[in-house]
Amino acid sequence: MTQTKTRGLKGVSGLASGLAALAEVTGQATHRQVDIGKIHVDPHFNPRGRYDPDAFNEDRLAALSSSVRAEGLLSPLWVRIRPAGGYTLIAGERRLRAALLVDLRQVPVLVFEADDRRAAYLAVLENAQREDLSIVDETFAGFALLCAHTGLSVPEVISVLNQVRKGADDTLGLEAFLRGTYGTGVSVWSQHRARILDFTPEELAAVQERQIDVSVAYELVPLKGRVEERRHLLRQAAADGLNATQVRALVRPLLSSGRRGLKAEISELRGALPRLARLKGEPADRARRLIQELQALLAES
Image (cartoon, rainbow, N blue to C red; front, side, top):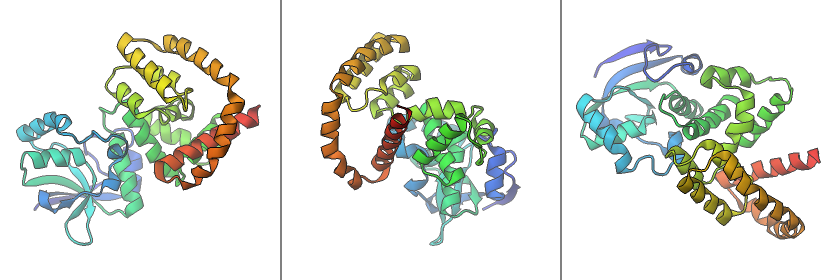
């Protein structure tokens, strides 16, 4: 096993504008060649796997496996020392799975000194710096990275972004952080990227597979709670190649008809509210976002 010290991670492929943030968190890492059987996977440190259940299916790994078979792993896996022995994977699970499929015995790794919080931050930061990210991948990774950077939940991050956009002091330095990492600022992330978190799984898949443009999916978000109508419009948009303006024209009358029954919907919702307290995980986070949106809407009225 060979190893070299890499201070500040200079020369590590896949990093661009986020290099300074990465170096600040990690300080230094060690490059090694290790037995692949010594690497253990913790699913909590895979940002993509949290929202893309098909990220590791065999079809999607086939092309990567072919590349690994021909050239080996060109980018090291990111790991940390495992107290029970071996290493725990921080980032690079798709590459690890591809290496296992082609029976690689040794793989290159970067070993970080990191606790759970730093490891989670590193996992998201590595994911965020890949050049092939779709806007969906980038958005989910970006909000996870913002949570790690600020210590706030996703709804709290969105609330702070909106406050900064409206003129509040940017005490957390979010504008500089976003521009340094993604090249876009608070306005984009509060008004556009936050709406991607409200896409349905079908809409996320349609955007990632380029069946529709992300601007089309934005127009479907106001149809919250109207699952069948929203799904029907998504299929129509994909089949007919509709643009955002065309979809907006189809959504508008549906929203108008919904307003006429608002009192009835409020009455129905009132009876269901006690069930909100039983939600956990992402459903609970989504409920908090919806409550914050409703409170903001009432405050503006």
